[in-house]
Figure 1 (cartoon, one colour):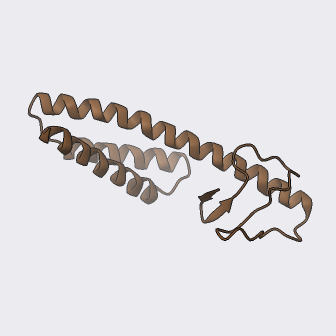
Figure 2 (tube, rainbow, N blue to C red):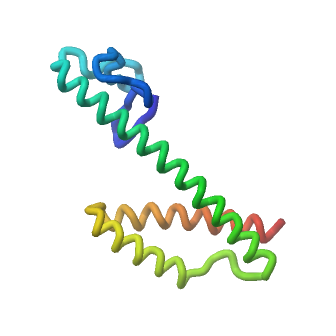
Length: 130
């Protein structure tokens, strides 16, 4: 069961409309009991899509971190600092522009990238100490 965007989906990626998987809260309580079957089916279909997108996001982040680990090793090997504030600022500005064009809140995109950057820097610092 995955909690996504404030909702909990119990369908996983294999649920199908009409499969009876329904929608549950964290306690297992069915929150769609009595809901029209077509609404329930659409909800299941949308949640399946969300689950698939979340899986893709996780895999993309894993690939990103593989690259940043290599950057961290390269920086450590050449005594470069773990953080690069100028690059980080350019990346934030770039991501904010991409967010606007994608109709995503640029402040949210910036918060997400700042979180990722902080984790990357932490990895780089760990690599530099090794």
